[in-house]
Length: 112
Length: 115
Image (cartoon, rainbow over all chains, first blue to last red):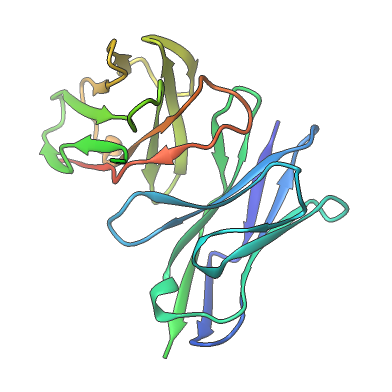
């Protein structure tokens, strides 16, 4: 069965610092991987999606993620954090039926 | 292009009652799925509909049901509400039926509180 694990339920960075949110996946087949962001009292917004076309995936709002098969990882990064990046971030894998299996989420706090 | 629209956004129900939540997918999208989000269980898949047929179902009791109409709009119903049903219910749509790798777009969600 496919699954994702997000390491760290809470990450705190200073404004302008590098953001690194970790996601490891488990899949017996090449996975389709996603990152979503959820702002307070809102739904999920798609940040980016990995479909095997390229290992480095660029998303919205300056985020990107790198697929590393050898490490079964799909970590999300942003070079410089903004206050507006404070939110909860979810990594997800798509199963063969198309449903998303989510990690437990990582809350990103950005300190001024 | 309008996104996924869910109504109502907030509602409070009493244990034992039932509730119906509505979802309008992105124009042209024919697949609608529902997810439940709670602090304890996180995001869990409820079911997916395509062309008015349930294509996939998660591990939820039969009290949770849904349907899809010919215009792709969907409703989900929860009967005999329990306190543990308090959650954010997210509707999502995609352009095609449940296929691995489909991009799924989410609505703002319906916040259900059961008292």
